[in-house]
Length: 443
Ligand SMILES: Cc1cc2nc3c(=O)[nH]c(=O)nc-3n(C[C@H](O)[C@H](O)[C@H](O)COP(=O)(O)OP(=O)(O)OC[C@H]3O[C@@H](n4cnc5c(N)ncnc54)[C@H](O)[C@@H]3O)c2cc1C
Image (cartoon, rainbow, N blue to C red):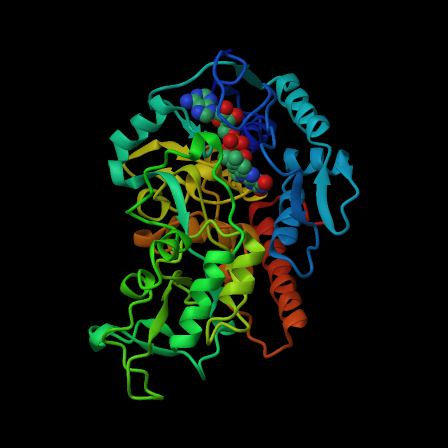
């Protein structure tokens, strides 16, 4: 079959993108290397849209949760991934969990049977010259990864994420923490959380005792050591290591004492909106529950709400804020779009949602039209804006959808009502956007 557009990777994002484009009447070639003699270290089958770990698409609460809101927006855009998930849902409270095999079989059947899609079981190792969406995920084949690195520059493609936790700015106690830069150089750009000697010693003991996540066999020989060592590994090397590393207090006068604290935890702004702040140098393999428990003992972070917790995994992703334009096109080679986790979004749902957007931008372009981007008040728009420019390119790491990616609503409402204020505003903005594109109304 001749095709209008080529999609590389038949995972969550690529399957969704293929479906959206085919449904818009465009002919798609979908290249998937599994089933053609190749696989990844995490996939077990040849099915499209295989969920490699948990069987959950997380919260389905569209009123109080950003990922639930994203589900709702995707359903309104005819998402194949959400439709198949709804069909194969298993009981999981307010979460959307699925029978993973039935789910993947459903997506595979729908994609393979679509008359506008040709699924080709082949590995692609070079960047094509025709219109293409690359959706090869966190475990992109080595040849293609090398081709992407050659096009974008080696340091623009990461092979591992080393994620430090990210905190919502409005949950930091600024009666304890203060804004300053070391030696007062530049602006007062960092939030500084001070620890005295007993607090520091307790913190180190907690890190040493904390439960850690193990590396998988194929992740063990990672080149992250030294460059971005997990804090608990630094703590194991000796009680003073962190005080000479990311918790160094020198040059940071605490205005409440007039002295340097014994140790400090610094947070740096992580998005242009100023709503999210990352804990500098705090990449960690501690289990998520342990991170919350231990980090809430840091003075100023007792009530911290985390937009993202730390982690270190094998994960290929590009520096999207630097490399991609607002329509997910590679600036240096605009026939190529990226979708899914390789753009630096994180998770099944987010990956599929970026698949929808890449497909719809591509479909509009192929028809000689322009698609207005979804507003930043919506879950889709917030994620897209973060990936394509809102995030700080220098510290770019994978991100889940969360309310911190949206501009704060103009309300002093209580926490639960505040979430509702975000989602009510999002629904209104999304409905206006749908109208603008003359798409079906949000149910
Ligand atoms: C070990 C592990 C555990 C994870 N656990 C979770 C979890 O519990 N929950 C969650 O939400 N997310 C999890 N993720 C993240 C998850 O991978 C993504 O959320 C999601 O699968 C990304 O979708 P994607 O379409 O971008 O990539 P994928 O779903 O990985 O799809 C990419 C596809 O591209 C194919 N491919 C790669 N290179 C080539 C090539 N050169 N030519 C042709 N085809 C190619 C691959 O075979 C694959 O089918 C996990 C990731 C890993 C690695």
